[in-house]
Amino acid sequence: MSTPKAAKHHVGAKKVAMRHKRRVVAIEAAASQAEAPYAPPADLAAPLVPLARAMNSIGLPAKDGSLTYHGITMYGGVDLGVGYQSHGAPLSSVYGPGRNYTPNAANSHTQVGLMPNSLSYSNFGVKGVEEITPGLNFVFNLQTTFVPTSGVISNGNKAQVLNNGVVASSRTSGGDSSRNGQIDNGQAYGGFSSSTFGTLTFGRQNALTLDAVIAYDPMSASNAFSLIGFAGMTPGGGNTEDARQGDALKYRVNFGPFRAAGMYKFDEFGNSNRNAYAAQFGGEYQGFSADVIYNVVKDSVTTSSIGAGLVTPTNVNQLNGTVSDNYAVMAVASYKIDRFKFYAGFENIRFENPENPLANGSPAEGVQLATVTNNAFGSATTKNRIVNIFWGGVKYAFRDNIDLIGAYYHYNQNSYAVGANAGCSSRLISATCSGTQDAGSVLIDYRFSKRFDVYAGAMYGVVHGGFANGYAPVANGTTGAATNTIDPMVGARFQF
Image (cartoon, rainbow, N blue to C red; front, side):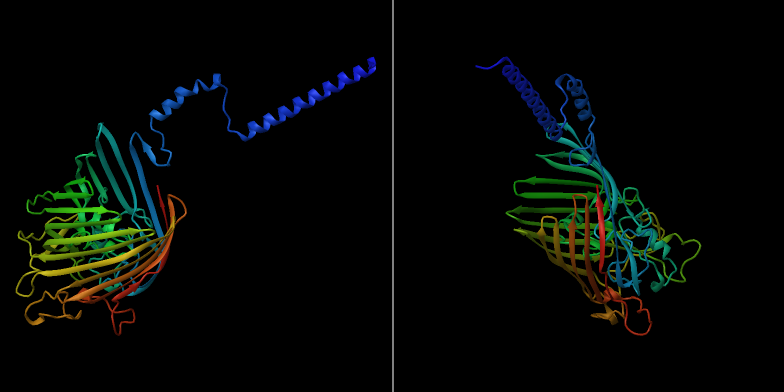
């Protein structure tokens, strides 16, 4: 039988135990709240529901981080590297690629320094999709590209104008281009897209052959690692200026595993005969993809700088032009198996004299043509020029974020000289002699994140015969010529 004193002690012990238990429960609850995300009580959270709905309705950036507002997306990227060229020309502040990454008549000196737009063009753009009715959308895209070392919009014709009157060995990097200072030097189109009936767009757009090169070139048409990416003859169906075409109507449609496309470029500069058209058919099945494209460009113009001693006050802002009607057939294929993807392509291009010659002083993209050559491919001294282009390569996904790529490219042209030079193959005789151009490249691309990657690689290129006509002698000026170049480099790219 307990005493009053013992009972009092027992009650006190129970109170102490209860206080200790309450402290433990409180500590555990606090720890649990600290680890869990904060969730306001229901009466406080309720007013936030309309705010959350309003934030969603105004189109805040998507969860993937893209800059999208009401279906309109801003995008872009900057690509810059450093490297070495065994034979090159000084960096240009206006030429889109910045450097002559393949052999060029101006490449006569070793170059070390910044290598812009090596893997892809630095660019800024706006694109969008707006639903009109279920299954039918309005689509648009506006893009411009620039040289990251100067911030200037890409302008190949201006680079050529700056080299007017300069001997080849003293010129800065430059060349003909489809990017000639336009605010829309990438693309600028609008149209309609249907999951059933396909996509129809109008404006400045990639040629079907350029789209195919981007899709089937193992180097994705890069400047520093792809001959067919840097030299626009392949994507332009004969001429780099035709790789992107203004005032063009383009239609694409899929039906089962097959696809088809067509494109028509309306007249340019008031010349009803200066147009282009193309057709494409292809498909894919179990990792295999292939397309065939037929492309025609009428009154295609290739521009070049005016030679030393020939510049006058009246033609300082003009260029020379060679006009042709170009006919091209392209066949491309790829096959993906496991971590490997294989690529192959072929294009045949025939250059003929234009059915409708252009006159001296005719307009080109941003310039006038000081002198026009309309008979380069069929006259008393020439016949049609034929160029065949082959390429192949492989991409290996070493890891999900690391690609190893190798590629090879080959051009050859016939001897389209007649008369005394018929069948010639020497670069010392004429550009009409037969010739070849070859390039091989390797690349490793490491993607740190969705928007940032670093890369390292090199391309070796060499030209022979007619392709090397007019090339400058090497720096010592004694023997040989700068008919080859290699460009090992490292770079980084940020995209948003």
